[in-house]
Each structure stands twice: as C-alpha cells, then as structure tokens.
View (tube, rainbow, N blue to C red):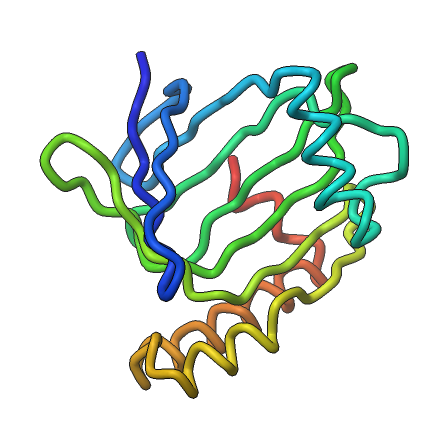
Length: 166
C-alpha cells in the first residue's frame, strides 16, 4: 500500500511524496521508499557527500521515514545499498495530519543529522532565522521549533534518540 505525503515548505511550495506504507498506528506513520541507483548516486553527490553526512562513494539505497502525529519532528533514516544504516536526518516540522486521505506537514527549517555512532550536526539554522524574519514562521512555530530542536539534541547526547523510533 502507498501513502501520499504533502510536505509544505514555506516560501518554496509543496513537495509531494508517494511512499510505501510499512506501519501506521496512533503515534506515527512509517514508510519505506527504494531509491533508484542513478538517483541515489546523484542525490548523494548533490547533498549527502557535500555536507559530510555520508562518506564519499557510499550510495543511498532506501529511505525509511518516521512521521509523527503529535511530535514536532520527522526522522528520515538513510539506508545504504548494502542495507547498512548511514544515519538519520531529523527535520523539525509540524505534526503529521491526515487531510482528505493524504498526509500533510509543514517544514520549520531546522534540521539535525545524526551519524550511526550518535555524533550529530546542526543544519539550516540560517534558513530558520531568515524564514522567521521573512514572516514564513509564526512566533509560536519559531519558539516550538527551538524547543524541539534542543530537546532532540539532549536525547541524542543521552543516547536515547533511537528509542523514539521503536
């Protein structure tokens, strides 16, 4: 079964994803998407290798997403073509909602990358601050995003982050 996820990106429009449903319960939606080889390599070249998240030459083979109904973040786990965990991309976003049979959430700009060993890197703080200055985020969203961002960093440092995905 497939699900449609509409990911609103303030100031950039909406990205629409069609993904394979793995699991759905009252807490979250879990999806899995296979990444075609040519796209996986190009995606790694343009995004993951450039910022040092994934080692040069390693290619993403699939993506597991964890989208939460009550949490203000999503998790995208990158899986290599050999099935190895490459790391986690945490995206601060509004909680997932179901609208007319499809799912929707809004990106709040802030992101974290977490390597499998638990080290992490903050991403897109400049975009977040600029989005707020431009009025793309409400004061409530700005405050909430900062709170969740700091909470996730504490969980990662306490080695409790992966437990959120169980």
